[in-house]
Length: 475
Length: 64
Image (cartoon, rainbow over the protein chains, first blue to last red):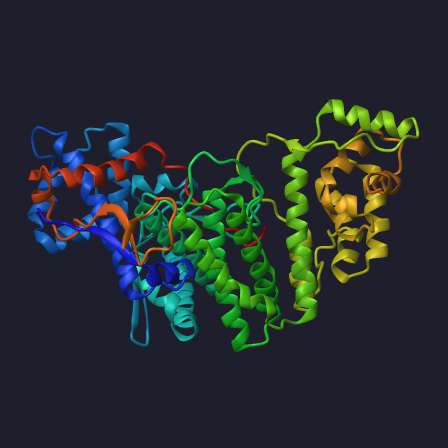
């Protein structure tokens, strides 16, 4: 049997890192994934003394139809799961119903899997099988999303047409506006809640398909050394390993490019906000990855190309109000991340209280430690919702639920926001959203750089005014 | 000069070479019958992943 190792030229590999894989590179990734599933199926077959039903079915189907079955994302997922579990793995079914969209000369043809047992393998609870109305909603959103992608985002549309094969509808998350996921074992499948509209579907499918592209790249080349620690990711509320940060950075490079192109077509304040928000987050995350020392040589090449791609976008002119609110949203996330995931030890909190009450300067540097918060978290930020509404000049608080601090913060009235947040903190000093809001507008740099420290001190010294504590810790 | 991805040192190679081999043109039946030493390396690459599948990636949420 003659077979060659997969190779990519440096130019092709750099273009892949920049999020611009050509058709040849996408074909290489698809062949790599087909090879992976073939090898897994070989292992499964060799564990059986006699041919199991699935094997006979694939062999009987002939080379083309057999390869179509093997290349299906759910086959790869099934094979990996069966091998890991040591299952007898007698058979599997490819289930679901077709969903397609055509615009101009480009067709997207996927299968909506709303019935197979494998749809539980994406880490999100699957939705009930689609009703006719539910299917119509997906179709309408896909028709419009595909029109936009083919018309204005041709390379992204070609990538989706080459890679995306299966959509698994999942239940919406009440705390999120939309939720989706991919599995590294199901190349070309995305799990996704029913989209709010065509834009959400276009961005969601693009985002998740790019994860599949990176999963396929990871199969070919190690990009991150194992065994590193966890840190900040601008897209998640929990600490992430470098491999996870790379996934987010790569996916949001595609999302950033989407909004950049949308902005070039129309002066949409929403597009300006998303572009301004993510271009900085992607560049910062790429720089941290390169500085972190956890990337392999291939990873360094990949992320360097990624950073080279996004860097020129940082200087492109964007509406200043959109930039202000994008900076606010990005900093807000980082502050909430610190407040959620970092804390100080009880001993250090007591030392802070002792120093304050004795009228002394703060004790020597108090380190922040990881606060072990279990699980993943998706926190809905009221300020983000307000910022988007403010940019669209909509009624920014139709339900009347926003706090005075949040309204003033988003409108740019820092003085009023500081006063309002301080009043709120006097009622409840344990609310991270309020602390993050105050840190966004506070004149005290210590609150911006280490909100968890000021919060810990404020909880340890409940009689001390928050503003004076922040000033004391900023000295 | 092809360099195996993951190797340290040196300049950027002209070609990035994977440890995975391309068996996409081989039928499953041929693959099952084959006992090729090159397969063992590639097989380890894909089965090693089974031991560290990780969580499903991401969870895109336009709200955060």
